[in-house]
Length: 339
Image (cartoon, rainbow, N blue to C red; front, side, top):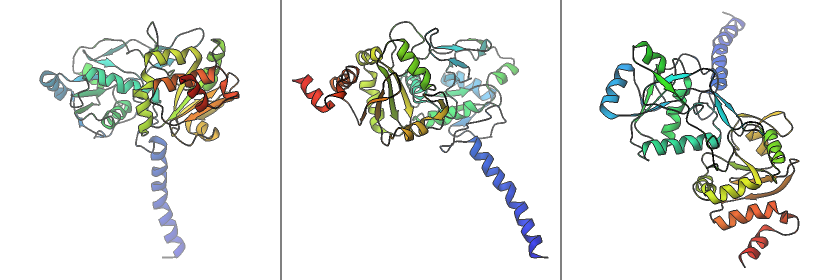
C-alpha cells in the first residue's frame, strides 16, 4: 500500500470530524447554548434536571404543583417615537393550563435586560424558592426550552424539568390547551418603567434617535458581563432604585450590553456589529463601565467601577447631563455637591 493511498484514507477519515466540529461551533455558543436552527430534533438528555413526558408531567402536576413556564419565542417590537414596546405574536398562542409565558428567554444569546427579566420573574413566581419544581417547555423540536433549563440551572434552581414534547405533545394526548398571553416586559405597562435599561438593546442607532427625539442628553451604555459581581451588586442596588431610574430615564436612554456577547446588534452608523465589538472599539476593558454618549454618538464621559451610594450615582447623571465634565473632574464635582 503506497504512502499516497494511506494519506488519502487518513484525509477521508478526518474531514467528516472537522466538518462536525465546525457545525457544532456554528450551532452552539462557547458556554454551551444552542444559537441557531432552534427547530431541530432534540437530544435525549437535558443540560440539567430531568426530561419528562406527558404522563410523568401529569403525575408531577398532581403531586408537586410545579411552576409551568412556556418559552415559545415571538416577535418583539422595540420602542420608538411612534409605538411603545410590545409583543407581536404571529398567531394566537395556546399553552398548558396554569402556565406563565416568558417569550424569547430561550435564545442562545440573551441580552442582559432579558436575562435580568427572566431572573426577576422566576424569583417572583417561585417566591425565591430555588427548590421549587419548575417545568420548561415550548413546542415539539424546540431547542429554546433546552436552553432555558440550562439557564435556570445556572441561576441556581435545583428542581428542574424539561418537557420537550411541549404544547404539541400535550394536545396530541387529548389534553386541553388554553389561550395564553405573554408576560409583559418592563416598559410595556402604563406608568413609570421599573427598570433603567431599555429592552431589547439591539439597535444603538435607534437609541440615539430616541434620545434626540425625546430631547434627552444622550445614551448611557452600561457594559457588564454575566459573571461580574460588581455588576450584579449595582443591579440589585442603585440600578433598581425607583427614584434613580426615573432621574436617569429623564435624561438618558440607557442600554445594558454584555461586553462578551456576540449577539448581533445595529451599530450607531446602522451597520451590523456585536456588543463585544462595540466594547473593543470603544476601549472598554473592565466592568462595570458606564459610557455616556451625546446625541451625535460622541463620548461625553465614562465611569468605570462599582457605585453603591445612591447619592453618588445620582450626581453622576447630573454631572454629565449638566455638561460639568468639560470643566471639572467628577470627584471634585461630587465633593462640592456634598459640601
